[in-house]
Structures are given as C-alpha cells and as structure tokens.
Length: 386
Ligand code: GLY
Image 1 (cartoon, rainbow, N blue to C red):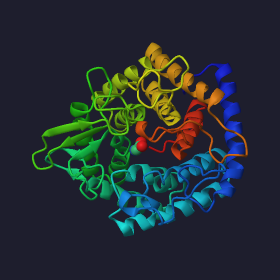
Image 2: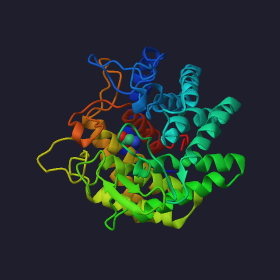
Image 3: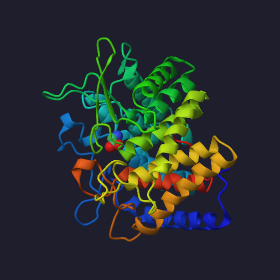
C-alpha cells in the first residue's frame, strides 16, 4: 500500500476521473495512430509512417512508440473496457515492422515492448505478445559489449561513431531482460542486465548522486574514454530526465534482483533529485542550467515521481515518507498548473522538453504515460509494467 493521506487520496481519485474522461475520447480520436507529440492544433501526430528519417530511428522505430500502447493497457487495467485492449493490440502489431527492419532498432526496445507486448502478455496471457517480448529481449541482449560490460545505446550514423556509447536511459530497458529471465528461467538475460547496471554504478553515478547522461567506452578494451552532457545543459551537468531514468531504473533493478547495491544507488540518486526540486515543484530540464532559464521538463517530474513511489514501497518509516512526499509535491505541481484536460489538446502534460538545447516546450506522449502511471500507483490501482 502506498499510504497517502485522505485528502491526497481525494485529489488522486479526482485526477483519475479526469484521466478516464480524457482518454475515452482521445482513445477513439487517435486509434489508428502511434502518437509522439501534438501538431499545431493540439492533435496527436503519428509516428507509424515511414516518411520520417529511418536512419535517425524515426518512423516506426522511434523509441517512444510503446507509450501509446502502454497508456491504453493502463486504462484497460483500470476500466476493463475491451476497446482499450483492441487499440493497444493494434499498435503492438504495427511494431512488428521494427523486427523486420532491424537496422533502425537500438537499446530502447525495453521502452517499446515492455508497455506493449509484455503488458499484453501480463494482462491477457497472449502467446504472440510473449514471443514479441522475448524477441525484443534477445535483441537487447545482443547489444551487450562483454569487454566493457555495457549495453550499446545507439547505432552509428555517418561520421558519428557510437560504438562505445552507453546512456543512463538504458536503466529503464533492463527490466525487459529481467522479465525474459523470469519468464524463460534462463539467467543469461539477467546476468547481462546486472553487468550493465554494475557498470552504470561505477561509471555514471557521481559522488553527489547525480548521473552522467552519456559515457563512451573503448569498445575493444572497455576503458572509459569520455562523458558527454547529451540532452542536458553541458558536460558534467545533471539532465533531469536522465536523473529520473536512473532513479526509477535502479529501483526497478532492485525490485527484480533484490540486490542491495541497486537499492542504495536508487536512494542516492533520489536524495540528489529531491534536494534539487525547486519550491515550485516544477523540474528544470537540467539541475545545472543557468538560473535565469525558465525551461522545464514535466516528463522528468512524472518519471521521477513514479520512481519515488516505487522506492517508497521498498523502504520504511521516515525514508518512505520522504520519497513519497517528494513524489506528491511534483505531481501536485503538475496537476495544479501543467495538466490540460480540455478537448483542445490530445495530450495532457504541458511544458515537456526533449533536450536542453532544443530550447522549446512541447507535449510528449511519455509525459502523459508516466503521469497516468503515477496516479494509478498513488491510488494503489496500478499494474506493474516494468
Ligand atoms: N531516452 C531518450 C530521452 O529520454 O529523451
């Protein structure tokens, strides 16, 4: 049980009513799409189409293409309305094209197939969905570099050699490997996930609990070559969504393995994150961005909140309260000032950001996904999809 106050429970239930009301019409309006963001008039765009640049992993291979299905499965679990399941299954089948394309795929197969195929399997027992999940897990395992004990993030394009690159985001892909081992009773997948997580502890997590976004290793001997600021402000800075991926990702590694080092690391990242939450509760794109910047990332807030709620469930007493209260603070800030419940917009969360240097706010599908996941978690009505 998550244990929130009665007043907070009332607020959460009111948010869930709004989520249900909005998703009823968004579901029908976007049923043939796989949305990422919104276009000019607040309408969902569509990332199924191949008129995007496939070499940049766009189109059907885009890393966020599992979140629409994930939202639908969360709502299916909540409402038992088969219409959610039907549309989610359709988007899962669309993703089969990625397996055929092969070249467009990357390490984010966890983000793509955990909230779609694996969710479907967990909720319906579909054997086709199980096969898709295991196929994706095998592709992720295939990206492991034994010399550096890391999972390679992206493919190389043109002059850009990413052979030795690993990124903090991958902590959220590891649960696909844990699931595959749990499902097949074959420990190979779990061994790879743990080796990668251990490499992240050694090379990404700094003394103060902040995390690197990108670390480059020598792909031949595994030595650490460089670090990059990536989607954050600059080298050595603290991209907030990256901190959130680390926080939630290590919590999930602990849930799957019961390894204390992962729980300790999750707590370390969480404390750093919480110490840096501004009074407003709105999260900047980077905790080290210039003070004059007003760029925010609501996705970082929603993801970190999900991680903190799960972390609270793994801890006790004051610590549990500390993590839970921080999650509630961020979610209330989103609820009061960053949620759009109107019919003018297909998305919910405002002021999401792709990267610091994009210097713009937009709607992003996984912001909505994690906001919904967080609300169901607070209500103790969630289904575990990671
Ligand atoms: N995984 C990429 C991102 O968080 O933008």
